[in-house]
Length: 85
Image 1 (cartoon, helix red, strand yellow):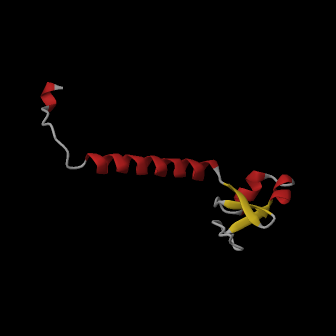
Image 2: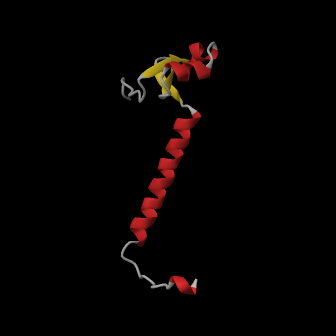
Image 3: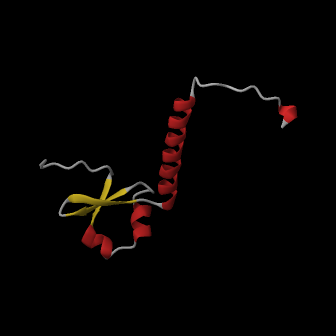
């Protein structure tokens, strides 16, 4: 078991401080960047704005589409005339 834990955010807050705080204000103070929520000085969760969360979901969708593109690349192609559609 590692004694160090990486924290993937520049801003942190403890669970107990989060309970006493306004999450919107915390995100505002962090400039919209993720905030690591610490429990006993280890990351328990990350607080993200809706905008950042939606951006992450879009990136995940894009990666899934790239995998499909790579899988289909070089496969059989069918020539289609736009007038026939």
